[in-house]
Image (cartoon, rainbow, N blue to C red; front, side):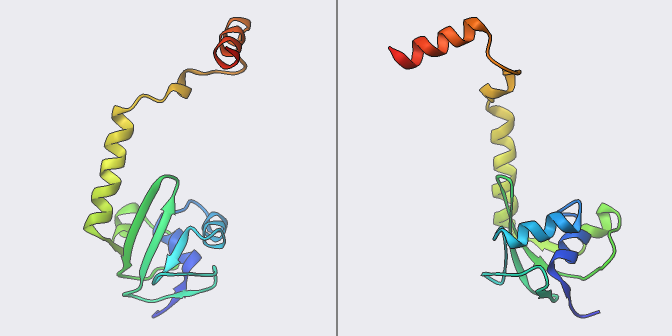
Length: 125
């Protein structure tokens, strides 16, 4: 096999859990193949460069192998080679997330009457 659909490759390389999620990401412009936007049916070859945005993370990978089957994570990691600067940026983002406290994590459901009064006092004075 010398070429494979990009959505199928992203699924096999375990970037996305399903092929439909991979298709949505490609259609949404979060995946670039060799610097250009691609369609889900665009074919990937070994040596192609893929820039991928998943959530707040950015992956810059080079395609090393092709597989149309989704295998174990160890096998999936052999399908691509991540750029060192991309890996470093991603690890920095993970470290920042661990250090920073997310204030919205404590919010559960609707505000109480007391919370609503505090919000109103803060925004209207």
